[in-house]
Length: 265
Image (cartoon, rainbow, N blue to C red; front, side):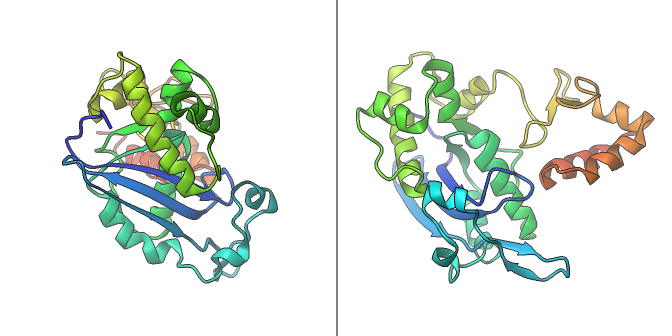
């Protein structure tokens, strides 16, 4: 791969019970970790998704049929697999020192992975790393699906699409071809991450809170869109309580809580 690495880069893909960041769970994770010296390691893990009943008991979450129809993973396939909480400590060690890449990962895979770590009670820093999304590159140059991207860049059909391993390895090949094809793409993870985000930095992983030119957080949604989060919380503390009550990712709520506690500084 033509990309220059100052630290490891993990390309990964998730298969899930659905697409809701706050309520859905991972059923499979596959990653390809590339090190600056050129060597790599890869692994695919099936995960038993868990949920809490009204009584607070942890039970296996059913995988909706529409999700299974896409990725081919059914309840019985993960019944004897470890839960995310069980694999979280090892995954933290693997992911802790790396920048992250994937296909549509900035808006889905990375935020959902962060949610799973939070639910497992495992702290992992997502702020001080760079994100590279091959889907964003493709959108900016040749808007298509991953299967079409694989055909376009690699001249091959993507077999077993929506398998986490197949999608991960296809993304590795697509990203390598994109770096070869587009001369305007930087060849460091840091510069490429900045370019793909169009100079916009987000305080959370779901894109609900962004930083302005002075490094202050502002809302990207809702009735206070474009306004300073801290200033809104100073004059309308009830809005903070409302934000905690709605269906937002836990990571986003954590950022709102930090700002709320610091609002008068």
